[in-house]
Length: 197
Picture 1 (cartoon, one colour):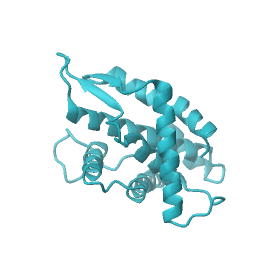
Picture 2 (cartoon, helix red, strand yellow):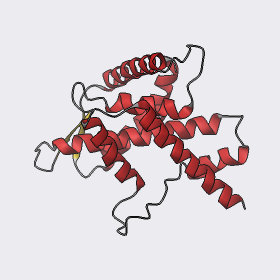
Picture 3 (cartoon, helix red, strand yellow):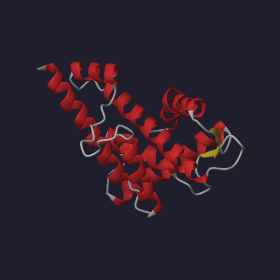
């Protein structure tokens, strides 16, 4: 993905998800840096991750990276915390909520990356049209967690907890996140096939 395409994704998907997160959070949330710097720094990290990933996996420059890996590259670049997480969170009394910074950053990255995945599916003319329409109408379908009896949690929440933990343990990787997005799309495809019957 070149910088122009990245900026389009930022404006059409990322910017909207960031605005939603800030507007609907139960805490006061601020972006750590200016919008342009945030976008440019995320693109710079994306490019570094992409180059590193291609080099480690011996992927030629003219070979395309699949949509799951593009979404994963964006996710990992967005949550990179070299200078701290992307968001600063405060409670109603303006006290910093450091643990909330990671949760809000990861949830926003997850939502943006799912949006990227949906966008790639919707515009892929080689895919079955009925599946593309299904994703346009329903989005990516998260699997139900059968091991949780309480309704207070779900796939996204539990997955984000694990991704935060992986990052703390320095084990957050492109293949890990790409596999998660592949599984999400596979679940969506299965739901589509069941609904078609």
